[in-house]
Amino acid sequence: MSDRRFTKQFMAAVVWLLSSVLIPVSALAQAQPPTPTQSQQAPPPIPPGPLTLDQVLSLAEPRSEAVSIAVAALRRAEGDQVRAQSGLRPQLSAAASYDRSLASEFEGVFDSTDTGPACPKFAPNPTAGIDARVAEIERAIDCGAVGGGGFFGSGDLSDLPFGRKNTWRASLSFSQNLWSGGRNGAQISLADAGYDTAQLGLTTTRAQLLFEVAQAYYDAVLSEQLVNIAAATLEQAGATLRQVEAGLSAGTQPEFEVLRARVTRDQQQPVLIRQRVNRALAYLRLKRLLDLPPEADLQLANALEDENLPPSPSFVERVSVVENALRSNEAADLSITSGLSLPARVAVDQTRATVRTREASLNLIEAQKMPSVSLNSNYARIAYPDNVAAPTFNRANWSVGVSMSVPLLTGGRQKGDEQVARAELDQSLLQQRQMEELAALDTRSAWAELLASRVAWESTAGTVQQANRAYEIADVRYGAGVSTQLELSDARVQRQQAEANRAVAARDLQVSRARVALLPELPVGNAIPGAAPIIPQQTTPGAIPVQPAPQTGGQRNASAQFTQPQAGTR
Image (cartoon, rainbow, N blue to C red; front, top):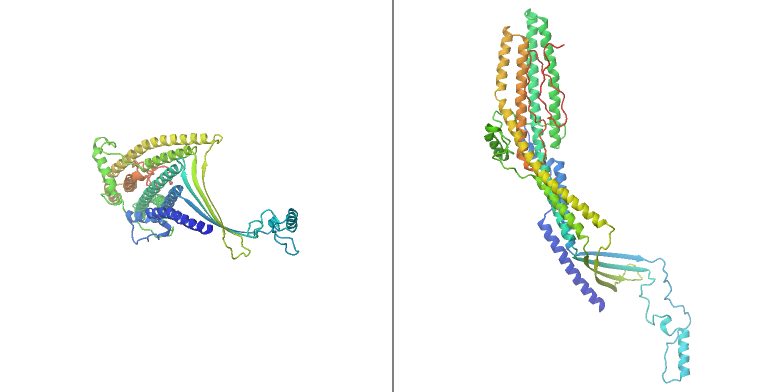
C-alpha cells in the first residue's frame, strides 16, 4: 500500500513539474522564433548586364561572412537570455543506473550454515516447571531456533541490499531556487545587455559592409574610367607620332621631333599598365566583398559620368536632407553646425550597453555576498533482482529538503571582485562620455567632407570641356605648323588631368554621400580613404604624365594623381 501511495505522489509531482517547466519554455519559444542562419539561405544569383550600386548592395549582405558572424553572435546572445531565465524555473533531472557486484564483504553473512536436521521451533510452556523452561531455552539457543541465526530476528533476510549481485536504480532530482539574493536578476540584466550589444553590433556590421561595398564599387568604376583616359591619351600620343613620322618622310619634320614624339608615347604606356593593375585590384576587392571567385565576370554601370551626379537611390532619402542643409549654408561661411541636428549614433548606444553590462556585473558580484535558499527533492525506485533482465522496483527512497548557502570567508576575493567591477563601471562611463564627444566630431567631419567633395566636384564642371577644346586647337595649330609639339603635349596632359580630376571628384562625392547616409550606424572615425582633394598641377611645355606607385595606409585604390617632370631634363 505504501508503494502505491508513493507512486501516486510521484506521478503528481512529475505532472506539476512538467507543467511548470514546459509551459514557460514553450511561451519563450513562441516569443523568440529561431533566426535562420544565412548559410541556410541560398545567396541570390548575379543578374546579367552592368550592375548598378543598388544591385550590388542587395547582393552583398546575403553573401557576407561578417554579417553571418554578427547574426551568429546575436543567436548566442539569445541563448544567454534563455540560460539566464532558467535560473528562475524549477530544475528536474532523471537518472538510471545498474550495478553488478563481482565481490562483496557481505557475501555469505546471512546464509544458513546448518546442514543437519531441522531444529524445532522454540515453543515455551508457561505451565512447565522452571527447570523444563530453562532447558527448552537452552535447546533453542543451541540449535538456532531463537533469533533466526542472528540479531535481525527470525524474518526473511533475502531482500536486504547487503551483498546483492544486481542493483537497479531509477531516480528523479528536483530543485527550485527560492531566493538567490539578486543573482538571478543580475544575470538576466547581464544577458539582456549582451543581447542589445549583439544587436547593435549586427547593425554596425551591416552598415560597415554597405559602406565598404559602395566605396569598392565607386573605386572600380573610377579605375575603369582612368584606364579609358590613359588608353585614349596613349592613342593620341601614337597618332602624333605617326603624324611626325609622316612629316619626317616628307622632309618637313626633323628627326628630333620624331624622337620626342616616340618618347612621349612610350612614357604613356606604363601609365596605362598601372591603371589596368589598379582596375584589376579594385575589381578583386569588390568581388571579395560579394563573395565571388576572382575569375567571375563582373560588369558595372558607369555611375560617375552623369553631369548631374544624383545620389544613389539607396542613400538619397538620408543624404538629401543633410546635403541641402549644407548647400544652403555654403554661401555664407561653409558652416557645418547650423541648421542640422546631430543624429543618434549606434556607437554611442554600444557604449551605453557596455555601461549596463558593467552595472549588471557589479550587481551580480554584490549579490554573491547574500545567502541563497533552494528547495531540493530526490525520489528513487530500487530493485535487487536475481535475474538481470527482470527488475522489480519494489523499494523507494524519497527525500525533501531546503538548503541554504552563505559565504562567510572568501579570503578577500569578494572585495577584489567588487573593486574590479566598480573600476570597470567607472571606465565605461568615461568611455561613454568620450564616445559622445567623438561621435559629434565625427559627424561634423563627415558633413565637412561631403561639403568639400561637393565643392570640388562642382569646380571641375567646365574644366573637361575647356581642356578638350584647348587640345583640339593645339592639334590644329600643330598640324598647320604654327605651334610646336611641346604645346600639343602640354594640351594633352591638361586634358588628361582634367578628365581624371573630374572622375576622382565624382567618386569622392558619391563615397561621401554613402558615408553620410550610413553615418548613424557606422563606427566612429570611419574616415574616407584618400579624401584629400586632388589639385591640378601646373605643367610646363613638354610635360609627360607619370602615374605614381600605389599609396598605402588607407589611400584610395585607384589613384588618379599625375605628376609632371620638368621639360628638357635628361
